[in-house]
Amino acid sequence: MSNWAVLLQDLIDFLEDFLSFGRVCRSWRLAGVEENFKGSQQLLPWLMLAEDQDTDYRRFVSALHGNPIDSLLLPEANGKRCFETLGWLVTLSETGDMNLLHPLSRFQIPLPHISTFENYLEGNVPNIFIFIQKAVLSSQPCLSSKENNFVLMVIHEGYGYLGFWKPGDKAWTSIETHQGAFYDITYYNGQFYAVNTMGNIFVCDVWGRDPTVAHFVGGIPHEILRFKRAYIVESKGEVLLVVRNGHDLVFLGDYGDEEEDEDACSDLDESRIDYGTSEFRVFKVDLSNREWVELQSLGDNALFVGDNASISVQATKFQGIRPNCIYFTDDCWPSYPKFKRGGGKDMGIYNMEDRSVAPCYKGGSFSRFCPPLWVRPYF
Image (cartoon, rainbow, N blue to C red):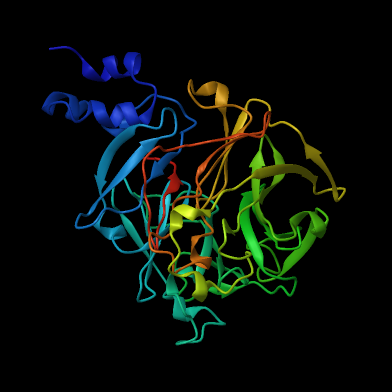
């Protein structure tokens, strides 16, 4: 019999092919284990679709070609809001329970209930699924060890506050900041960096002397972010701010202007509504000098943004990934809860060169609590 483990090294470079290999037969399944995977060290995100009705399986789509990869059994994510960070899902249930979930192994790490946030007021949260807006890990939790030295940072209470959790803590710890609401977080050079709605970047050193204090370190003019959405991502050792335009709904036809009360629009035909993101702008921020410059190109890099921790990948390592492009999913959906299908329409691939938008998935996938998001499939 052939040595399938050796064959794997010759034929399979991407994890999605590796997992499919293990489903062919018993011999291949025995060879298709983590120890035998010698493929690309830079893992390409998958698009996790919204959950289907009456099933505990979640479908995944390849970012390489937009085709289905496979379905994974994930009852732990059923009916829950999900966020992605370093291949893990942070899940939030309608009762306020939270967990870290590893989607390939289904291993879970319990997190403190949302009621342990300092500013949480029971009964004052109209939609519990929008209480958390972003979650970012400092490093991957170790599945085989009880001694983990990682931190999970979140934006909570809408876009309002920053908070973090360390293994062993019984409650969430709040970050002191009075500089406005926050859009996104990234982990860079051993510290957390967060961008607020004014375009200001703050650093949080959760291992330092003042772990609950955020310090201003730079940013972009707040006029650039007016009525827009921002992401922060590390790319090739540099900090980038990504500004998303056209993120809000624009009503078409004779339905009135975009400031019209949403109650009056709750019965609209959604085919007459433009959810579309129209433009991205990217800024490189020098945190040491507090200077910034707008970039006209990402070079051979591609960015992935949405309800995931923002990701930068080198496109030339993956045949089929488009360089100088931004892959985005719908993370504006909670603002419009009365639309029948929920979030999932505002997804696509934005080309920085010609400013065009192409679909990243040709099918439909909608949810009121967990629209599609990018997931990195780490073992």
